Amino acid sequence: MASINQRYEESLEEELAKIDPAALQYLEQLLAENAPAARKVVQNVLDESISQETQKSLQNPLLPKPCQP
Image (tube, rainbow, N blue to C red):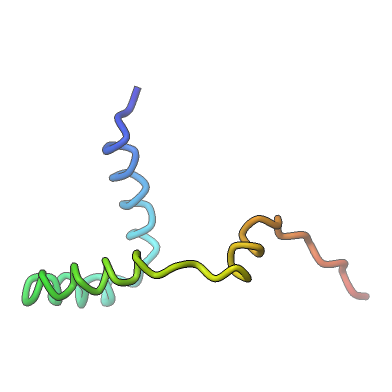
């Protein structure tokens, strides 16, 4: 059975594969040049609360719209 860290890494790799290679290269450069600032930005984003409107939309499944002729 895969550990939580292994599953997290696999999920992260899948998501990173969806990002444009140029954007990944830019992010890598930012991290190499100023990792503490990048960590602070990420932590600030993670610390932000999710609005009630967003929470409601996350709880409702996306329903397909009817096809128009």
